[in-house]
Image 1: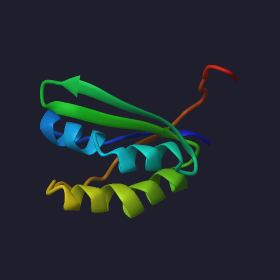
Image 2: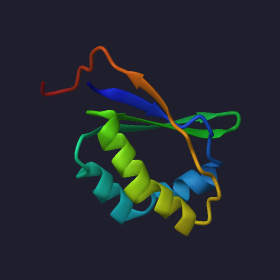
Image 3: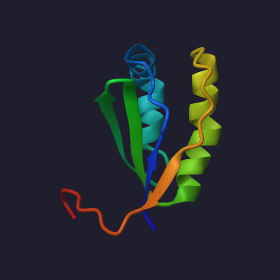
Length: 95
């Protein structure tokens, strides 16, 4: 079942933009098994990151294998425990 994954800890925009400008990271997520969409929502405390994955397992693998190491490498001290929400339906172009 598809899931919405939300990091409850907003990132400062400068930190988010630094990660989002990493071309290797962007290509990696586009090709990650189970990846559907990435959203960055601005708010008063920074950027809230949300993603849609085909399964929680796919999302967890991405977080553990790619995102947490990339955050540490970028000097972002934040460890995260994302919120997961099962999705009932997703409508995408071309489906």
